[in-house]
Length: 229
Ligand SMILES: *Cc1c(COP(=O)(O)O)cnc(C)c1O
Image 1: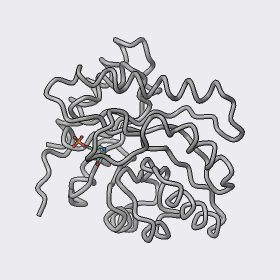
Image 2: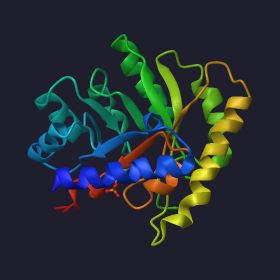
Image 3: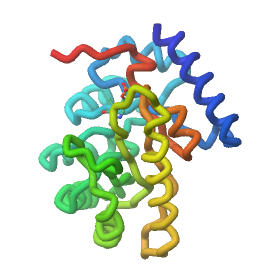
Image 4: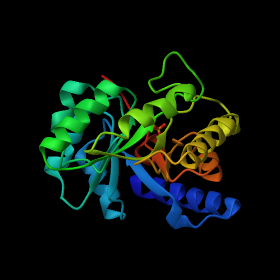
């Protein structure tokens, strides 16, 4: 199943790139393996996938530690401060930074390990109450504050768009996030230059690519639906 699904996802990514006049190399597929067993991840690896996303630290650590070092892991879910110490040396990027206290802890733990954390700032573009992420209006001030942190390098912005029946409905969300990134880059804040946009999930990644996504996070479309227990 994973093999077939990956072919389908890859074809859709390529088609979205073609429609948008983008090169396929501008878009990185993160295979979101949360709740899924090692055997399914192995099937994806056998298809050439080596970039995975998890939303829980414990699960990321277990999978990271039991699979080859050559894989790249992205922390995409809400992150509690007391778990940050597990991440240095295990994650390529943290996509879900949305508070100063969390950024301080990341700065401290990665700094202690002699590493620099590459992060994306999570933005709640649609302003949904149920979602984590900074309101659009607070992004610039937040970036100005964390630009001082020596063990953090901001790489871009991330959003989880609303659940919609028709993916097209999220186009303005993705467009707004892209504009926010362009706007912030134009302000020349010291230490802040971003070029990554993590946006688009199974339901809407094609639209996200058309609007400039550089990371798409696809779970269900690759591994099938999740059963939570
Ligand atoms: C689970 C998850 C995804 C993948 O969702 P699908 O709809 O299964 O593709 C993407 N991003 C985040 C932050 C997630 O938690």
